[in-house]
Image (cartoon, rainbow over all chains, first blue to last red; front, side):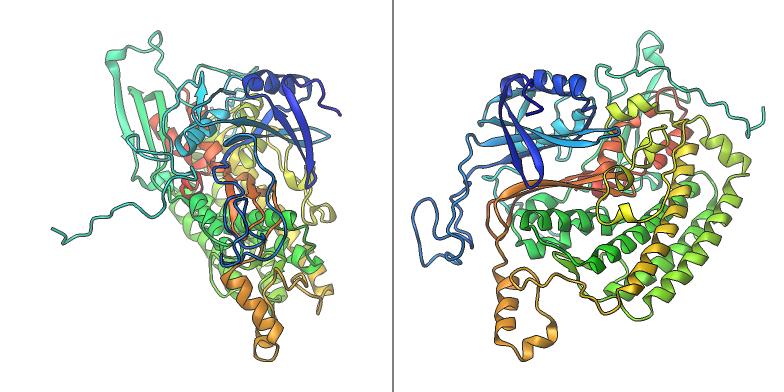
Length: 181
Length: 423
């Protein structure tokens, strides 16, 4: 493979015509610096985390049952006989890189984190990561070590919780109406 | 000195990375800290294009420090979409960037189609390009009208909205609503191209070319416009790439990069158009890029209409009843169609497990959509890469040493749509 020299590379995955490099979270800055300087990925297109809490346990249409067993009475429990592949840890942080030039290539760098684990900031590699990492902190509570300004960005400064986590409840915000005592 | 003479200086090398590139801090060596006045610009100000707050440290009339506060329009689209079936989700992306709605819809639909490995008919591809380019002109016209309005060219607003109205008329013709049409569906289009659309689109192209000539006649020779925009809000090519800029902001900094040309999607490799690039990286060059892009979009629309006319009678949506709603008239006669309709609307359809990242060139730049599916009828995670979110990051770099009055020109030129910034 072309990306064998990337520090901390765990595996290379090809799916849906996209290349994903799974990288050891402890060496992500090293790997990103290598990709930027040696492979020419000067452009960080996106940084998108995902929370995999409850992955594969959801009773959804398209499965025969769930990981916990088959429940014929659950809505939509018939369909594809497949349970999604388990994930190694709770959070994935995906860096979508782009090589700008004559032979443009997109690449996804993926790291896995457990709740409470920290990851090094890639702001020194790509300054554009600043707001992306603030958003990731705000929405998922992922701490980026060495970030110059890790504050909430989309939610209020005094907001509690991280809304895009899977265990964050939806529809629970009390609203006061005029005329209310 | 004549305003027509270029006085722009171009950066030599990059000033990045600095300690916090997206926050401009007051330099105590250059400014007397006792003279610094901190002012809130926004969140409610007509020229912030929504609700954006800029905390500005002023030394006299010049900007010494700046940090942008966003999030006032955060509505949790990404969280909401995790609760909806794929079919229902299509409605949401349009509301994220409410000016370039077709592109948000397109990028999400392309992502789902990529996961499903669904082939779309060529008529849908060409119509998507046609509607997309109309939407690009729509977005640029709103940008042009409001930015010029803020710099004092009030009549510009009315001229821009005159042509913009023709575009929403065309939207109404195809989708029934003037904005947020939900015309792109997973698998193709909601309806066939309506009768008379091609003539109206051609009429619009003719009118639009005249319109652009008119806008340039108003602004290009206008001393005030030139003084306000030239040499203001500088961003070098290196800084632009380091800050992840894309679209007109990047092309106005001299980087020849357009996803439609460099990494073609839909059928952009089959149409003929040019990518405007300007070297100075100031507000004026961003304006020129927008103007030239509108001309190129008119060219693309004309080619799309020509091609679409040859496809009369061809299907506009994929023939896959597990994913695509059956034609309405079949519901009265066909049991299977009724079942399919019911299943798709109530339960949704499963999308194979996986993750994709699709990208389109929206009017503001690289619009990305990262989608994770666990194989069920609802997305596990949806994330939009919003180009104007990234564009606002560059505000601090662009505004180094600028005057307060220039701040309005600069924020306008970055073309932030706060709905998209805050999502």
